[in-house]
Length: 330
Picture 1 (tube, rainbow, N blue to C red):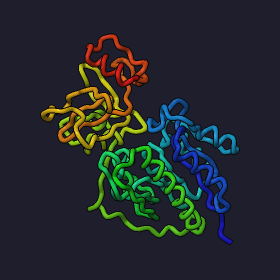
Picture 2 (cartoon, rainbow, N blue to C red):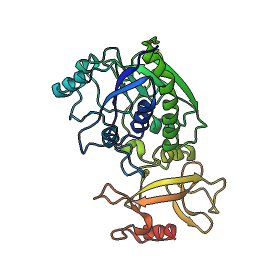
Picture 3 (cartoon, rainbow, N blue to C red):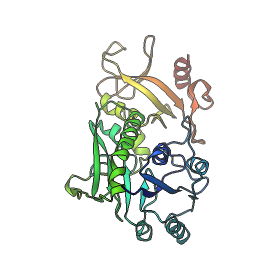
């Protein structure tokens, strides 16, 4: 009879990756969940801030009667001591954004296993679903790997491929990868219980690494092609929306599509030209087409939040932009 694997789960407090992982681990007959490590109160992963149906991993763990460790740093002496008291065979990582140092890596009796939502060695690092949408990726995947002091560079325990068509939003890719990661978890658990840690070193020649997206990565350049513009828009779904400056203001475009033909007669417009069209509403010219804006929000300089366009403040906007917002709100 195979012994049960005693595990501690590490995940962000509001993670929609970690919450279903914990549910699956609690329900699996080959797993004994010893506890949960998450972030200190008030620290949230920005992937999920503002989304509907928020989760709280700490509350979920507490309801299950599990010990919950919430130190500012997982590498602090207090955190390491708490982990040792839990005496895990494995630490399992599912969307935990602190790098584990040697004292933590040495805690489990066997290994630290990271479930990373990308086809490593490609898309190592943060927000792989953003970058896959941004790049129009067609060959995605999920990986279970043994954690080392480096970032997402350990030997691969198991992988599952995920095919894309290159037009998915970051949110759609995230949902696909999270679902496939749960399947991968169920594939890996029997191996962990049996102590089978056969793994394959990563081919570093194929490695690509991406960091957290910054303003330049989420801002539209209207001299790009329609395909490039739409990739940025899809990469910024469901939030925060692709940023563009229009008429001295800042807008976030949440949904858009390329028009098959110009809605405006006459010569080709300069990139960035903004028009309203009776049939298509708000349209903006890019290098090779007109882009129809389907959903947008006004982004005031003094607030990180985006108000719905119907409630957008008009003060300080030019008459032209006021007209566009009013027309688009109707």
